[in-house]
Image 1: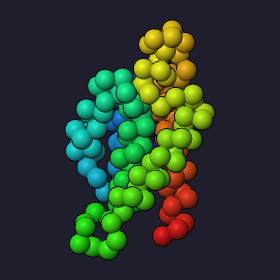
Image 2 (image 1 turned 30 degrees about the vertical axis):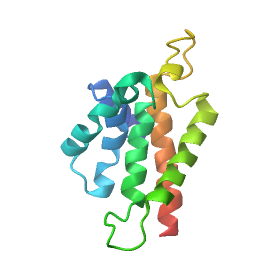
Image 3 (image 1 turned 135 degrees about the horizontal axis):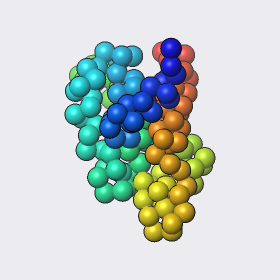
Amino acid sequence: MSTKAEYAISLHDQGYNCAQAVACTFCKEFGVDETEMFKIAEGFGLGMGMMEMCGALSGMMMVIGLANSVGDLNKGMPTKGSTYKQVKEYVKKFQEKNGSYLCRELKGVETGKVLCSCPQCIMDAVALTEEYLKEHQAEK
């Protein structure tokens, strides 16, 4: 059996964008249809189509939202604030490792210096997502 990182890379190799590769890797854990997630995540590739926030991180953020959100404002305490806090924490971990969270900087568009390849961004985002899920499943 392959690891989640290997699975995400295989999706990327098939043509999934970075956001789709990460988000779709975690569909089974949440009972989310992979085709639906593929559609949802499509606009988040290539740094949200504008070389802004790394697509792999956008996929990670989607999974953190799936894991943390109460899913209904009438059902318990709102989780929006805690989700934002957790997303920020994990994006910061990625930035500390790779020097940026922006697609254009990671790809070296302006500097010519690539900080992190797409496959490595995907692997790092998957690893951080796994870390998040492991840490936060223990809390629930």
